[in-house]
Length: 221
Image (tube, rainbow, N blue to C red; front, side, top):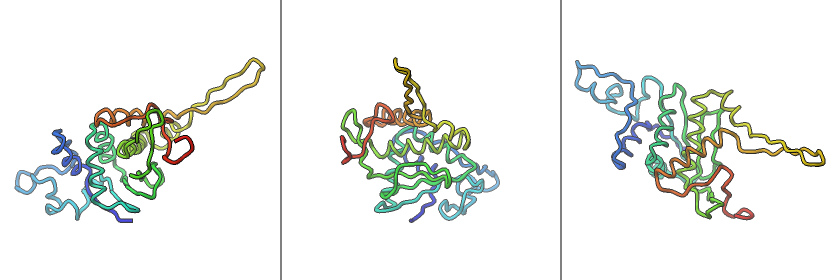
């Protein structure tokens, strides 16, 4: 697995040039009027943002796996950043006191690993929206998983895992038989709503709800 250390703010600044949005300033390095170089956000690193770690420890690390290369990762992140909602969720991770990793990996499942603070996204997972038959863009899946990481960072482990518990609905028929139906967890519902907002911003097909997807090649898909 190859790892990159590229600040999310640098990627968001690049996307702002493409999208016409003003980037958010998140670098904590203060301006020192006594030195001209202090006006450069990377002056603490001798103007090399890739060689040194930001002094406050805030960073999002990036990694690739499988057949994904670094150029594909950069392009994927820029496309995700076309969504203001997606950028906001990324910023939550960048401003965190904890370190998170975003890994674009053609071998992985799409998920957020709490044990390592790693967000895994598979750009070739071939996820289909069942209600429309269209492909759910991997970038939207990425925003969905980033949103899980952002919410984990906002709430903490206990509250986040509580929100991941599925809803349970009990029903009793006329014979007194009770059935329990498992529904979508509040957290998956919330992350899907974030994903839907991003889809509208970017102009991509959106699923109607969390369950409205299947993998291409599966039965009924």
